[in-house]
Image 1 (cartoon, rainbow, N blue to C red):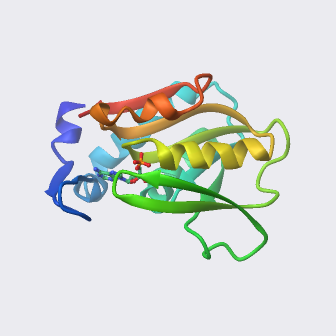
Image 2 (spheres, rainbow, N blue to C red):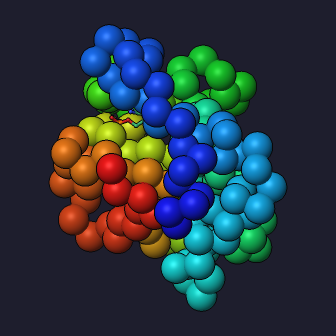
Length: 172
Ligand code: AMP
């Protein structure tokens, strides 16, 4: 993992002063590193019978869609307000650098669907918590939440439901 994450670029003061942004775009650009990252995110869930990956806008789409293909699962986007065209459910949340909300199409999941949440970074955990709340309102069964990078000092995993298994590849 050391080589992989040498490709994560730290961008100070983005998008707000005081935030050290973990930019994964150089890693996405490197074919071998990107493949290794996707394989590592998917590996713990190979036998988990995942029906769908839930990816969070926007970098969670890049990782989530690739992990879904790797697992033979479908993909469901959780999007910023006003982006999804059909009937949606909404959950407001706070994040490291502000407040926002996520929306999910109504009917994305059937009761008991096995869902894996994917995003690039977990910081304060508010975004992931909102996505999980939306999925659970549709009675999805959460098989786990996987992140490329976890910013440990922000303790985001502590705000996720205790019964959700969290895997992060890099702790910073
Ligand atoms: P949070 O809700 O605070 O856990 O924030 C997680 C969401 O915001 C994820 O979708 C991340 O892509 C993004 N994010 C928050 N903080 C950072 C950071 N320091 N570097 C990169 N992305 C971040």
